Image (cartoon, rainbow, N blue to C red; front, side):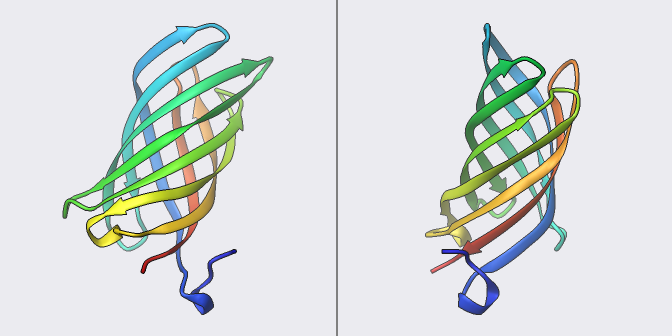
Length: 136
């Protein structure tokens, strides 16, 4: 089901996520990253992000998957499962599902996608995010 405002969904469009690696474990050709960063929402909210991702390299393209936890200043949280691909120093794209939430996001479900750019050599990333979500 695609959530839209007409069926009770809400739209976060173009929130920004920027992050830097906090810890990298290299098990070539796989890597494990713990990333930290910020999400900037159109309505002025800012959340901190902690993400745990595994990466697999195949030539110039990297595939990755993992989880991201968004913490808001009021103590509310969201957890998303994500998958993406991209060139570590170039285009990034992927999708995610919102798995759970707490506080004002308790019971949240949703999905979305992201596009952006990676910055070699350290794995910094900047993405624009669009998500559709439903709150009970």
